[in-house]
Image (cartoon, rainbow over all chains, first blue to last red; front, side):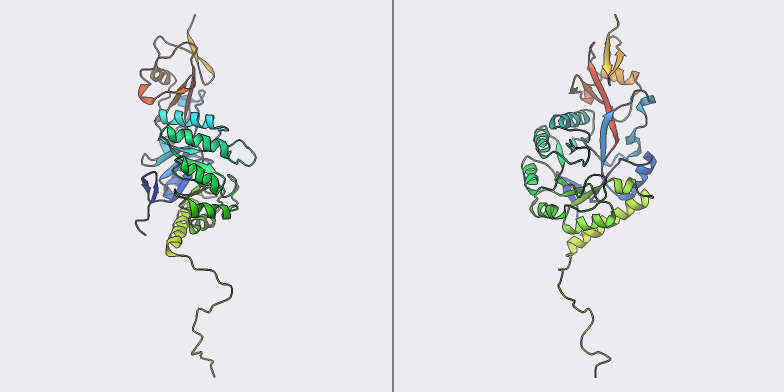
Length: 260
Length: 68
């Protein structure tokens, strides 16, 4: 199990925890939590530079070690064309050719558009990108995304930022059973136990942002998530016991001291 | 008549022969990643020093920020 690596598009990762960099109180807090999480892959968004701020304001990449793989997202894009445009801009400017594909037209629940996501994925794969699509846990859509060449599938556990846990667990379970690429549970995980649960179910990795960034002590919560992901993964490999209907004693039923 | 383009929707007065690299220098945007789109097309970083801006160009300058 010491060589239990996560492989995405031929690249190996020791950590199965991917973190987002959003919503922290400061870049320093983000940097420290990311370091404590042990993650090797972090998401960033892409936005226009504020020309009124000197030098465009602080640069987040100054707070991220160069050996971390940056995963630009297409958050804010509502159509396939917008997502492809953002991904191309990021890659042309020197960011990795990996993209967390998000096509989200719905601001209330931030649910992704499956049709536009599939369209964008097809285009981006054809353009040579390594595509990690954010999606509703739909096993059929997962198959389609895999067929067009996506490197992972990333089903949401619950809506982004809600911390409600594995609300869509059964559909995620079917995806895990059927997927030929890593399944990364992304969004909605609120506590380390949710992450451990996802890993015990057989998820290949989880992506966490708000639950760490909005904790009272983000560094401590980052550690808790790291340990939970390791625990859940180790348990999965160890083989979780089958559930029983009735009790089975753990102590011998013969040789009782009180036996007549 | 001064030649201008727009950068993130704002008017920018062009120097003669101004390249993308010179634009970033003038705007003091020398970060690790300055991402540039010119008239809707992403500009390759390796070409920043060669691509000359033309009057009326519509430029977007972006970069990575915190996000999930």
